[in-house]
Length: 122
Length: 107
Image (cartoon, rainbow over all chains, first blue to last red; front, side, top):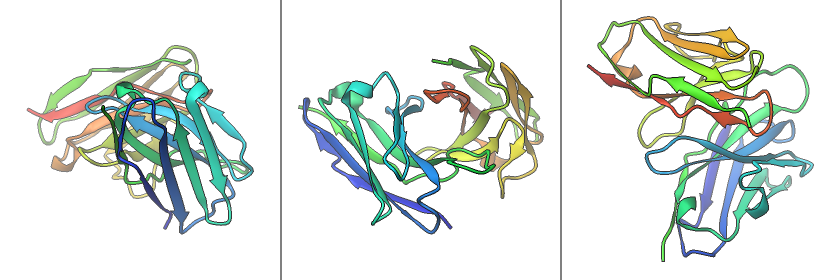
């Protein structure tokens, strides 16, 4: 059974950098895209971006200038950094498994992390 | 970006009711649409992928249909466990986008 376990700092000041990591266990890490998705309190879901094992990434243009994703294939981890945070970045951040890189597997976001509430406040 | 619009935003229904939620895309997404269920404090759960395929382990009272720009999620007989918020999401073109959500409440 695929499991995603995420962690990172939950309280930031404006202008600081958000940093989260997600560890994947129980399944193939190499064959998929791995995404970050966020949800402001009481609001809907926003896709932040994705990365694959080789480090190839796609970001949401709305956040692209502030986002960096990375991958550590030796640990089956992937990470998110979001710089220059403001109160508008306060949200629950989720990691999730996206689409398969090859072969027919038409699912997306079929496994999710538990979520991390990140609050930006002075 | 492809905009996803769900209706209604809130739906009040009783146990046993047939419930339908609509999702419209601002341009054609073929069948690249997923539906998720989210309960308070929990991560979303995949229910339907590729517009009409039921995810493993999801009860058969859930079904999805549609293609192009108009899609529906139907719950054939609402159960107590189904009161939650439902989101559609397109994965036809970047950036992946979600609908604003439909909250299914107890009538």
